[in-house]
Image 1 (tube, one colour):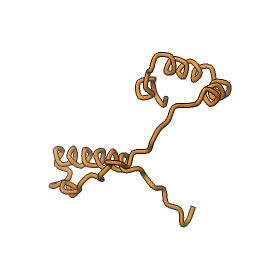
Image 2 (cartoon, helix red, strand yellow):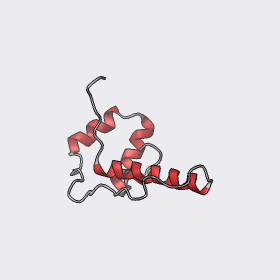
Image 3 (cartoon, rainbow, N blue to C red):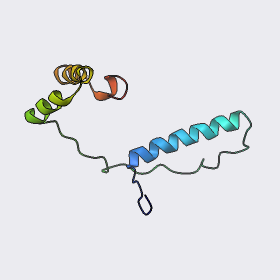
Image 4 (spheres, rainbow, N blue to C red):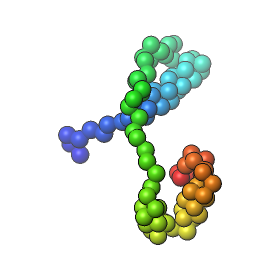
Length: 93
């Protein structure tokens, strides 16, 4: 994959920064390092940069149900008919 570069969304970059910052803070607490080198690193501005989302059309949702395995189909139906967000539907939903 020479010459290709994956681009992360601003939110993803901030999430990665939070994780790295937490790791470095833990390392400081455990006295593995004397200072967190990214303490002053600022988060990426995400205002206005979030991807716009839209609901599936009826046909798209019907097609999704047709190709999904039984477990996924139940999750999708539950989410669609209860308003359950993907983040609450279970692992890797």
